[in-house]
Image 1 (cartoon, helix red, strand yellow):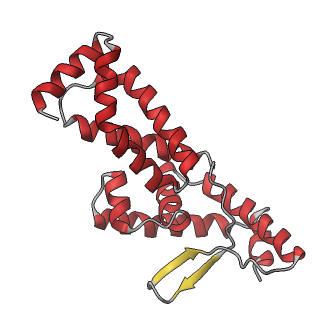
Image 2 (cartoon, one colour; image 1 turned 180 degrees about the vertical axis):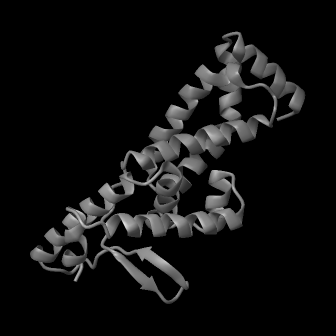
Length: 201
């Protein structure tokens, strides 16, 4: 879309013009959904998130001050919406425990439990998952977000850098600190964390 046309539509939307909003949304709805799908990895959740973004776009476009490209502003809005959904644990995945990753040479990773396991082991893994989620909630938001993106959602470093608008070096250093912080939480001499290392044996 030409810049002049886009600016005209923005101003019309700010004055409440629904037709202008529909034209603007038509131009951006596909990339919005693509971002949602990439982050959430679920078509239904991505559609819900994209609809929330559209609603927020209508309500918040008056806040756009042309300090960046509209596309950048919209994609940041989209990313924040998806991160909110991830932080609310709408994608509750079975997580077992931290293990050494010899292939990627990373200190810690989350690993999905084996599907062919006993009922007893399944119960233990559910308990481990609950403990891990509680531990994650004790971390500050920056750490919790990057752990969810990397160790649970399995995004590449480059994708995380783009999503969080930080450098690749910052991604790696923040992830290392976040994993260390989570390990400290799990090593606390109190319940439920005392049970964590007993259950994972």
